[in-house]
Every structure is written in C-alpha cells, then in structure tokens.
Image 1 (tube, helix red, strand yellow):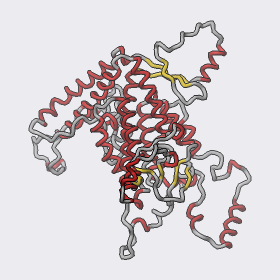
Image 2 (cartoon, rainbow, N blue to C red):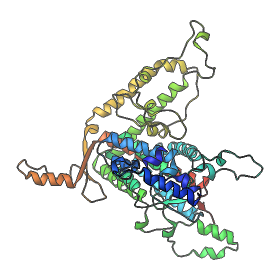
Image 3 (spheres, rainbow, N blue to C red):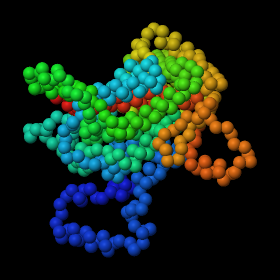
Image 4 (spheres, rainbow, N blue to C red):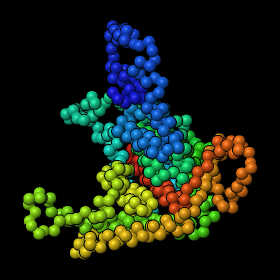
Length: 505
C-alpha cells in the first residue's frame, strides 16, 4: 500500500481481479462523491511522487542526499522489484522468452570487460577478487525475488501448495522485459558513474550496488545496457571449415562459438561509460610518474588490513558453545574486544558483501585518521590469501594485534601526508558534453586576472562542471572501479549459466 501510494501506482489487485459491471459503476460513483475539488486535498500524489524525489536527489550536489537516494533505490529494486517496474524503472515487456545471445558473444564481452579491469589497476589480486565475486553473485542471484520461480523445479499435481502458490507471492508478477535506453533512472546512474573518480567513496559504493542490483533480476535482459544486442552482431566471411561438418549440431555449435563484431554505435551504455573512465585513468597514468606503483601500494594496504581483520577473527575461539555469565568459572580467560573495534562508528554503512555476508563496512574500514577504505573492495575483493586456520600462535597474535593495526595506520597516514597524495586534480565537463576532461598541470589554462569581467566568469562556471579531488582519493576510487568491473563480469558469467541466457547451438 505504501509503494502504491508513493509511486502513484494503480491498484494492481483490482486490475487483476475481474469485477462485475455493477461493482465497477458503484466504485466509480463512490470515487466521484468522495473526490475533493482542490488539488491540494487529493490523496493521490499525481504531481510529485517518490520517483521524482529519487531522480532529483541523484542529481544533487550533496553527497549525503545522493547516497540516501541510491540506497532507497537499491532497497526497492531488491525487495519490491515488481513495484519498481514501470514507475522507478522504465522497461518494455518482451513477448519472446528465448535468448538469442551466443556463447561466442559472451566470451568476447567477458574478455573486453576483463581487459578493461586489468588496464585500470593492474593484474595484482584480480584472480582472488573474481573468485570471491563469483560466489557472492551466485548467492545474490539465488535469493532475488524474481529468481525464485526461474530456478525452481516445475510444480507437479501431487505436491501440496507451496510458497509460490500463495497470494502474497503472486501479487506482482514480473514478465520478461528490457530496459529502455532513455530510462531516467539509468541515465542518472550513468551521470554519477561518469564522475566516478571524484565522487565520495560511499557514493561510489552505493552507486555500484544499485547497478549490480538492477542486473540481478532474472527477467531483465542485459542487452542494450550491459551487453550487445544480438541484432547488432556482424560476422566476418563464413569460415570454409563450416562446410566440413557432417553433423548439423556440430556445425551449429561452431557457428555459436564465433566471436561477433559490432559497430561503435551498438556499444552498451555501461561499457561506453567505463571506457571513458579508462581514458581518464590513462591520462593520469601518462602524466603522473609511477602511477601503477602507487595504485599497487594502495591495493596492498587494503589487502594487508583485511588480513589483519581476518586474523583477529580467527584468533577468537568459536568452537565451544556460548555460555551464560554465571557458567564461566572464575579466573577463566574471555575474549576481549580490540580497541579499534570499540572505537568504530555506529553509523550503518554498506555491507562488506551484500551477497549474504553480515559484516558491515565499518568492520573493514581504516581508522578515523586514515582515508575511507571500502571494505567491499578492500576486504572481500582484495583478499591476497585465504583466511588461515587458527594455530597455537593465535593468542599471541591477539596480543600483538594493536601494534599491527598501528603499523597499518602509520603507513596509510604516511601516504596521506605525502606530497603525492595531497596533489589536487581537476576534472572538467563542458556544458552539454558526455565526456569529462582531466585538467592536468600541463593542460591547465593560466589563471584569470582579477580585472577580468566577472559576468564572463560566472557564465563559464554555469557552463562547465568542474570538480577536483586529491590523488589519494582518486587512486582509491580507481581500486573500487576495478572491482566493480570484475563484479559485472561475474554477474554476466553466473547469469549465463544459472538462467541459460546464451545458446550454444
């Protein structure tokens, strides 16, 4: 009821249930009698609803407003996906249920995305991050409301009515649909993604989570925004080996495994936006000395911090069942909460892994003196080695943990205080343009004199969107961006196998 009112939706139950003409007339008469003459007294939010609020908040200059709008969008898409279709997300229903994407196109797109991720921040830690994302994405897809009927076993008459037969589960059915290219919400997400390097860390975490949640619906096709539409496939001249196959199935498999080509205009919107971010990173790499080494050291700092957190968890004995305070004998040892855990902020932040794990972002963040380290990318995805089993040295390690944490804080603080991390880089987006330019030192125009026309300066401020950030902040966002691309690759691969989205013949 709340979503129907806030999103200005029609009564779905009444539209599904056939009613007699007399009941319809009676309902219309009652609505006319109780309708108010003034627009301010009407209960239906026909002028301004939740969709307008979300779209307006995502375009705000206040980062907290943007984060709140993205988190609200993620909740609606993940928990009440059927109500978001047609209101928050503009889609087009599809009449055909078969998938036309080939396994050859999937392999080529996965290769393109993987090459882009490696080019952003190097190969270090990519294998471990991708393996972790495969497991988390599988858990996310299996628990999505739209996936329950897709992956469920076919019902038989001998079985008793189950969960899917309840009226609550069937209130909002989701049919196969495709995202419209001009969808306002998706365009707002792409606008935020284009400014990824200068956004706040929390904004980028909420943004990537919203995009991943959008792609977890089993009924939503990825064509057009994440993958290439099969209608735009072009193949080179037929291979002469095709005629040598005597079996039609083998010939069809060979044809499906070919790598297609497509025009630049057929590039998915999300991949095109990521390519623009790659261009910005390439510009920074060409201008800043030892760029790759600084990115690698940032990733190592995240990895080492996560190893320390995992060791602290393993050092706490968990094999024995918990006992009440009265059952603990006097003088026995009890696990102590480390100082850095007690000093954590109480504000609920994005989960370390929204794929079924319960740890919060604050459990893997750096201390308040360090720059914000995203646990989802610095912990789950940048794991350098698997968690080590508890050993006799665990208790000793628990005693040494504060000193290790101090070393981590000291190293990161040293990076923050260095001249390299404090350097500011400006990004300029011309008015009406879809590209962001990196204003490096050798490309920056000379500063204007105070005697210049103030009106001309005001007009240039209104025309161009200029934002800046420190190099340390930009490098952190580059690490987040690489892991987001890896998460997209895992999403495409798991969906193709779980939902049979590609054809092999």
